[in-house]
Amino acid sequence: MSQDGYTLNLIDSVSTESAEDFTFTVIGPDGSPVKDYEVEHDKKLHFIVASRDLTSFQHLHPELFPDGTWSVRLKAPKPGPYRAFADFVPTGGEKLTLGADLMAGGDYRPDPLPEVSRTAEVDGYTVSLDGNLAPGKTTKLTLTVSKDGKPVDDLEPYLGAYGHLVALRAGDLAYLHVHPEESDTAGPGITFYAEAPSRGDYRLFLDFKHKGEVRTASFTAQADPDAHAADHTH
Ligand SMILES: [Cu+2]
Image 1 (spheres, rainbow, N blue to C red):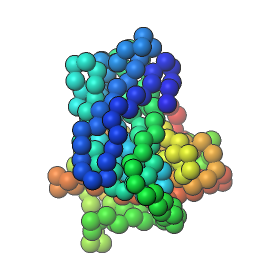
Image 2 (cartoon, protein in one colour):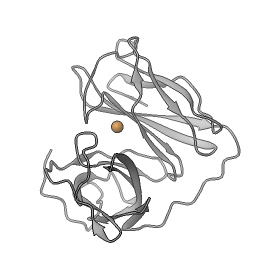
Image 3 (cartoon, protein in one colour):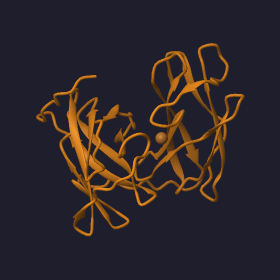
């Protein structure tokens, strides 16, 4: 929840009934809310809310008020525990990802983690995953979008790239660092570099934009110790 003297401070609770204003602050090393942020991937802050069982994922862009309060409309799709992540760069500081837990009241029925799969379907799109995560190594992942059996080569830029990938470890929801490869082709393949912290199961969420709409394709993947490290350094 805290890193380098910064803390994610969730203020509101979340409801399963209706979308409500959800507010939070990032408390800085001086004890007051951070008001100045660098723009990264087109936004000052990326807010991810995932259910503990990893069957629900929301990637949101809250509004910043001058006093350092962030606000976004938020609804939980079902009761139970969630983890929220704020991904940002405070002005003059380093990139941070802070997490905090929140709970949607009601009867919690966790769903099992979906089976490991190399393809995901969303709204008539098929997204296929090439490459493997590997514990302790950076590897290359390529996601390829098609529709009705045809490659989609007119993806639209979203957050400064042709796709945005978030990867979370099953169980503790550890957040992986993923970097898009700079590309000037608009699909059908979108390449990322990711490093898994350990063996185990992970859930990958790819946001991509086509014909004006952002969709999310979700995959369960296992970190493979035998996968080859990518020839790519950060
Ligand atoms: Cu974002």
